Structure formats: structure tokens, C-alpha cells
Amino acid sequence: MPNAIWTGSISFGLVTVPVRMISATRSLDVRFHQLEEGTGSRIRYKRVSEQSGDEVPNDRIVKGYELEAGRYVVVEADELASLKPKANRQIEIEDFVDLADIDPVYFEQPYYLIPDKENAKAYRLLVDVMDELGKVAIGRFVLRSKEALVAIRPVDGALVLETMRFADEVLAADREQPLAEPASEPSEREKDMAKQLVNSLTASFDPEKYHDEYREELLALIEKKAAGEEIVAAPEAEEPAKVLDLMAALEASLARAGAKQTKSEKAPAPAKKAAGTSKPAKRAAPAKKAAAKKASARKVAAKRTRKSA
Image 1 (spheres, rainbow, N blue to C red):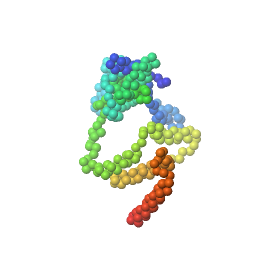
Image 2: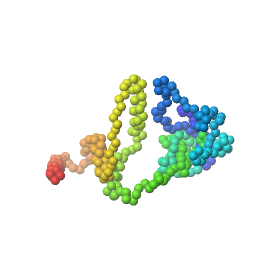
Image 3: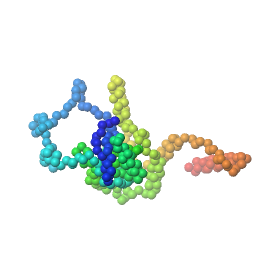
Image 4: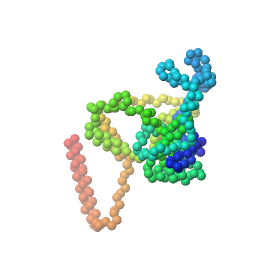
């Protein structure tokens, strides 16, 4: 069991649910140390004064906020301490909202909220009610001396707390320039083809399907080098051609998506006879003749198409 990052309770109305907060994710980034070439010695950094070049001890370092280039306001440690939010070990729920109302851009980092064994009933009550109503709890609490806005939602019988960005931390997508000019409005035909392409690529979300291919290749490279294997650099991939014709790109994409789908589909199983059919067995022969006629008609149509092409 991971160590608790925070211990406290969830509060809504007069109901209190004691919980412990643990990480819901882990970083698998491949991290490197800086070494001196030839000796393999670790490189260390020192805090050095820009003015004198001398190393500065920790007790001589203060915090400064840069107002403009080279001009700072120094804020003392006791001044910062006086402004710290008062931690009360409680997440006060302010609102219950629909998950669909929250844009994912506001979400930051997920954590699990684990109940105490002796208070499991109140925890289960909150999970079940929020799950049945499809609601997410919005509240705030103090985490690492900083006030955090959070969303709490039920996931697979547990509560997941997601730290959130405040509204003024989210920038508008078109803050630099408009995202599209009026002349770039797509045609109805382009929209229809794009919808077909999206529908052909639509599937249920399966997180196991996606892998960090760069990390896997990097770890394989490290393993080979550690084993003394010679590494041959792979040729650089060619840059994809620029799309000049949107319709041509859509048509080619649809054709490729259709080919992939056809390749992945299994041959259909032979149809079973429906129980209680009203057609007698002797009618089966005419049905075969009709199917043969249809097949012959399709062959004739195909020949005509090839001739006209």
C-alpha cells in the first residue's frame, strides 16, 4: 500500500467521511544523470552568486519575485508563512455537478481517496449515491501549503480526487489570433466525409491499447548497450507530405480505413436456419436458383463497369 500523501476527511452537509489520499498514477519517464565523460563521475550543481561567482549557503538564500528584467521584490519567509492557508484536514464539498460540465483542460493530477475501515459505510454511501446520480463533487482543501481546487468522482467503487486548475489559469485557445478565417469554412461534402472517417475509426476506449513506444524503444536500447551489443542507428523517417487537397486526403483516409476494417473483420459465420420457419424444405432449391441469378447479374454489372471505366 503506497504511503498516504494527505490524511483528512470529506465533508458535505453534516456528513464527514474520513479518507487517506494516495497517488493514482506513477511516472515511467526514463531519467538520466549527467556524468563526466571518461570517468563516469556524477555532475553536481551548486548555488552560485551571479555577481561574485561564489557559492551561496542555504541560509543566505531568499525568495524574490521578478517585476521586470533585473528588478525583484524580496519576500521574507515569515511573510510567506503569514499568508499560508490554514490547513484543517477537511475537503469541504461546495457543489455537486455533472462530469460532462467539466472540460478536461481543468484536470491536473488524480489521486485515490481510501476510507478508514471503521468508516467504510459512510464512504460507500457517498460512492453509491454519486454513482447513481452521475455527479461529481467540487471542493477545495490545503495540499502542501497550497489551496487546491478538486473534483471528486466515483470510479469502480472508489473515490478519485482530481486536482484542478482555477479558471484564470486556463488560457483561451485563440488568445494570439483567430483559429479560423471565414474563407476556411469546410463544405458540407467535406464535413460528411470527415464524419464517415471519424465513424470508421470509432472504438471503445481501451487504455491497454496505447503504449509509450519511445520509452519502450529507449529501454531496449539501454538494455542492449548494457549487454555490450553494437547499436546501429536507424534511418531517419521521411517527413510526411503536406496536404494540399483536403478532399483528396479525406478520400484516401476513408479508403485506407475501409481496407484496415475489411482486413480485421473475420469471415461471417454461416447463417443458421430460424426455428419455426414457415417455408417447407422443398422450397430450398428455388432459393438457390435465385441466388445464382443474382450472382450472374452482379458479374454482368461488373463487366459493364470495367468496360465503361
